[in-house]
Image 1 (tube, rainbow, N blue to C red):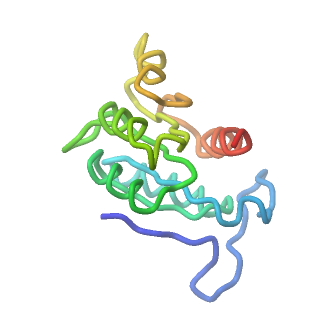
Image 2: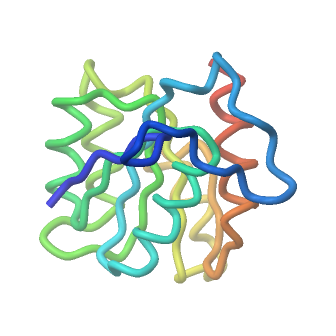
Length: 151
């Protein structure tokens, strides 16, 4: 199930920005990030933090859903776990990078399987960055900002 979150509360007031994070800027206000993780708590934590940091967020819980959502919504960036049901993150990343509509989207691989060679293999599959879990939400937001600034 995917869910769009916004950068405002249900009453229309801006959400508070976490300590140490920059205020929302016009440049980031409408940036859309797809967070893909089968573990609800991880996905929710990163989605909420990205929302508080000024991004709109979509969520997917498996690789197939990630490919479908990315093809339909064309997010500005994807955060992809590797160990996913239905279709793993490796295959989802390869499919997204092979598709003309989605190949330009930066993908950050965020995984708990940080064994030797996984970062290299993730880049070969098409990932633009690799982060190991556990990953502080602030580190993820920094990497998201870095990749989006390159566009």
